[in-house]
Length: 279
Image (tube, rainbow, N blue to C red; front, side, top):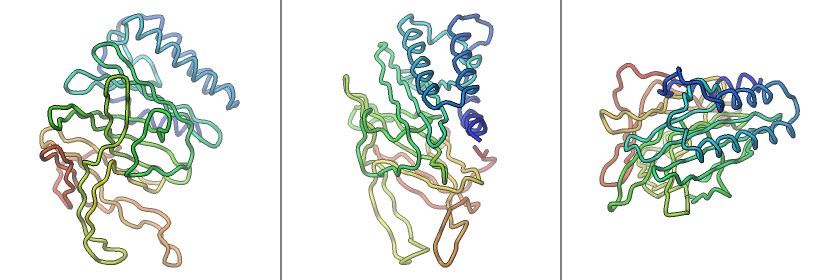
């Protein structure tokens, strides 16, 4: 099962690799050997130690200024995403443990400064209004990074995925880099909708991130549409209900969006999307 989860996570990040496959680099061999050892061992202690080794190799790679030329499509289990403004490169990977998962995210800016996030997480909830730091980060794999500006300051919207053991989650978050400080969360998500399943009344709220919790047996669409400048996502409705209690949610074939307007992500319900792809 852990091997399946690792492969599932790779389907989120593998399509975004764009570096040439022709360059032979010693880092490729080392990283692939480390991940092979991670897959082959059944020891959580060994996997945690090997994850530290992966980070150490990545740290040396960046220090040697070779991360931009390394053909990451040859590194089987590390994703690489470049922000459209060219200022931030994101590397991420995950290590499955018996009852939890190690999430790793390494952000590198154009000056060579890096921010490293790591977290062993299982079924913890994510607070949609809390500001997180590298020390309190909830843990996720990010597969998209979208720059936007508020008052001449650049922020980055992240689209991510995480496994909660009992369900899966996708998340839209904001990461900020202020000198040596890195924080996640910004109250720029304005939400307005009808609470169809409880009160029937209109809900208005402002959140620092958006979290989608859905059944492990289904996929959820969450992607940035650059041509329309909006984040598109499946609408989630009750999927499994027992004795009047909602146990899980799944897509109901309608699509919502968050549109950027004056530095805010504004919720828009029930949009039309052509040819969307599930991930």
